[in-house]
Amino acid sequence: GSRGKIMSGVAGGHPLQLPSQSLPPGRVPALVVDHDPKRRRVFSKDLVKMMYGFGDSDKPLAETVDVVEDLVCDFMTNLTESGMALARRKGKKLETENIVVLVRKHPKMYFRAKELLRMNKEISEAKKASADLEQIAKKTQP
Image 1 (cartoon, rainbow, N blue to C red):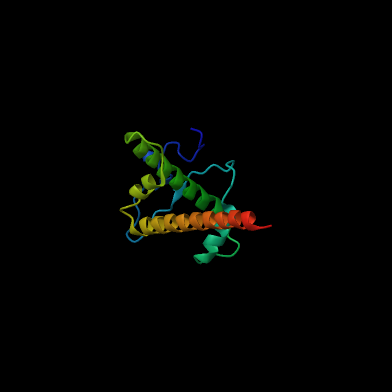
Image 2 (image 1 turned 60 degrees about the vertical axis):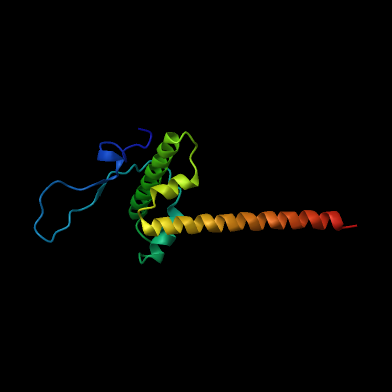
């Protein structure tokens, strides 16, 4: 598809694949991520800062950042596509509430999404109030 190698041959469109070999007790299988090195990197700078904030090196390997970006982009793509499917079933366009419904069973994501929506609303209202005050100030100037 248009996403390159990331989605090809992966059951359910999930980018993570675990080897099928059996491992000795206590061993964890290596994570295999099939990523597209040609894909344009959009979030790399932000991801480096986030990774550092969560305990990684301040200069992580470029390959590590690429893999994390692939995972983030695939997660967001899958979430958005699921939200669009939900909206279509309701005969509507994709709205933020569709995403909130999809993450409702994941408390951390749900409450963070609700908090971000609340903050976005407050910022929008503050901008509108500021613009209204500017209009009033212009009208009252001689």
